[in-house]
Amino acid sequence: MMKKVIKNIFLFTGFIVGNLTLSHAAIIPENTMLAVKQDIVRNNGSEPVSLDVHKVENDVEFNIIHDFFSGLVSTGSDGKVNPDLATRWETKDNKVWLFYLREGIKWSDGSPITAHDVVFSWRRLVDPQIASQYGSYLENMHIINAKDIVSGKKKTDELGVKALDNLTVEVTLEQPVSYFLQMLAYPVMVPVSQKAVEKYGDKWTHSDVFVSSGPFKLSEWVVNEKVVGVRNSQYWDNAHTVINKVTYLPIASETADVNRYLAGEIDITKNIPSILFQSLKTKLGDQVHITPALGVYYYDFNNKKAPFNDVRVRQALNLALDKEIIANKVLGQGQEPAYNHTPPNTGGMNLEQPNYALWTQQERIEKARQLLNEAGYDRGNPLKFKLLYNTSEEHKRIAIAATSMWKKNLGVNIILQNQERKAMLDVIHQGNFEMVRYARIADYNNPASFLNNFVTNSSNNTFLYSNETYDDLINKAKATNDRKYFQQAENILAEDVPAIPVYYYIGARLVKPYIGGYYLSPLGFISSKDLYVIKH
Image 1 (cartoon, one colour):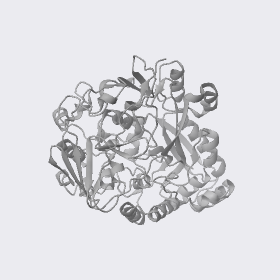
Image 2 (cartoon, helix red, strand yellow):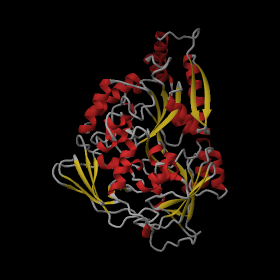
Image 3 (cartoon, rainbow, N blue to C red):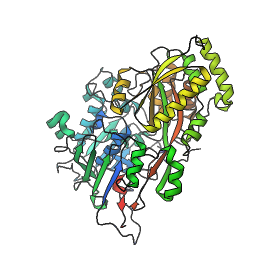
């Protein structure tokens, strides 16, 4: 069972005022001796596709954006929503919200951050010409007109966000959303500099003109080698930041990641390869950090293309995959087999698993064979398809295990294909795949963060799945945050199987003993501003 790490934000009728507690500082225990050099090196797992907030979709980019930009609010290690660029907020009806920005806040180039930057940024996020993979995020927040703007029916200036003056942002929702503030804390909601974007266009992310608002700013970007962030002296809470430089490496190989850690070249790894996990745990002890995470590892189907436009084929492959073996034997770091699309205890809710989760694996296999036979496949006419994954030793191990299970249990013939991450994402967005490895990490701590992905025409619906009944249930769930609607939605996914949930993530990293303040959030973020280097 996944530990509840992030708490819900409960909204009450009446007048709501934002909590003014702060958690933006590196907390250093008394008598701790700090190193003279406050620089850290983190492996980030891959080369960023972009650092344009509105043109990214994965943790590789958001890990950096999380360090480089500030939003109106942020979440602390206790899961509470805290002021960030906004010092306070208020609402009378949970539909119209006012956010009051801090006086004197500045971009890294010294120019003022204003409410107009916020309006510009959110309009840009839903602009069909930008075509952000997170365009539907504001739609999921139920901001007025977001849905029609994303679909091209209305103009961006009709979005329900206004700058009442330089320091006041008004946001209007179509209906109350109980987790609205949590959604605001996700990196895709951070403002970007209107002046910089309009002046430099697509080149605004180049290191020589890059402008940010967070604890760090871009200093250097050497493609396929490193991204370097240095301390942003203009950051509103710079006085409580200790780290002076963060280097993000794009090492995709988990083994190379560990080897460079052992050689003293990396302070924090991206992962720990499962094949080395037990030996590293024995050898390094407390340097191995395992933390809960709100994430699901998937095999996505292209629901529009044969053979996966047949629900019986999708159901059969889901049933014949032994998720217990993958979670406990292939990986074995604390991952749990996934039968729902929402990890346990997300938003404080434990949704019931489908009936087949209680079957023996042999019972699942027998049902899978029956379904595949009904769909017209057998040993004489075997199911054939291609499984695509992004280059990684771990993804390869899991894919080999999965395909061997399907071959043994169902006689399926599968061709494994691997591509670099950027190329794979391009293939996904073009719809040119049959089955593809993917993952989803929560944007906020609520089942909607996972279940919104399956809504018809959602910008995150890479499965090309559509079910009107499901869409209606999600709309009701977002309006009420009622567990029963989330449960009914999960039940539909268990029947339709638009994707196979394989296992629930954990965060497994190696962290040098001289790194203080380390904390991996359930959403997968490490805040470099909270870190410090101990004398060693």
